[in-house]
Image (cartoon, rainbow, N blue to C red; front, side):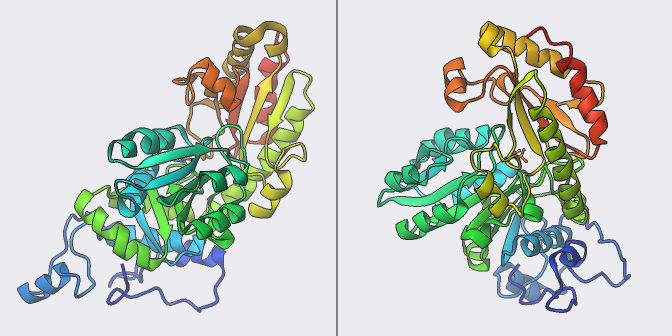
Length: 413
Ligand SMILES: *Cc1c(COP(=O)(O)O)cnc(C)c1O
């Protein structure tokens, strides 16, 4: 929406992020509703044929058809843009379709992409396999070594794609350093901000051009819907992405937009509360004799702890991974059975690969999210069979410690 006709919420120009999180959007309808309305309508009635023609030709801004314009979706887009400090945002049907829209909008055959090899598994498949079919080549490089990114730059490099922190190892990349490399290469930098959300990390403040979201995770925050979004300058959104959305239709439904819009209202307090609990959990895990290693950016033992604290508003986020003892003694088989034991002994945690929920979730990455990799690939990625990932929710931290201790205290390591 380029705001030629559609009015804005009336707020003082200097209101802060927490206020925008509950108020940015569209003005209420004629009925004065205080909670944002859910516009379940596929199309919008036009006053006359000439106006309809002008609106379809983009000469006049108005709601036309919900594949590319819907007031509930616009409210979500404006609110997320405000939280990310972006000029504009375009909502998509899932996090993956936000990355699909990114590629379709910015890339063509012959273009080259540089991507961290530690990003979300489906992102690796989308760049490596699907975009590859259309003649876009992707080089996968180290998450943490900017020199590898610099060395991978070619004259045809158009896009750098990063995610921070990553799943499940919580590796942090230096967004500012990657932005400098992108600028020098004349390429765009896109950052998947799923794990931190704008409550903790705003990649554009460090020079990113585009921010990707899986709204499925912390933006909704209650595990209800699949959603996604792409934040960028108004020019990129209007010129590169709106036309693709109109033709290709990876549209976020109004209902899902409404759910995530209302989720944004509590995003900041949820992220703070879940991250506080995650730090307590990580600190506790590090002190357990049955735990070999803990991966959490908020711990001083994390290799990129200082960078994470600078980039993530002083917080490690809400995802903690750890390795149970057993590998050195009994190899991958024992490590895996020990990890399964800890997971299976839980009575509170939800055994599910999702994250970003108020309910704490627990998963074994080596046999689920990263189960399709060969053991060799997993070893190279550092995802061993003894690894467990916990995405801390709003459960009482003492209940989660007790839940994990049921299995940890009865391990035969
Ligand atoms: C879940 C996830 C995605 C994909 O989002 P969907 O909404 O499931 O399509 C992308 N990136 C990261 C980091 C994720 O965790």
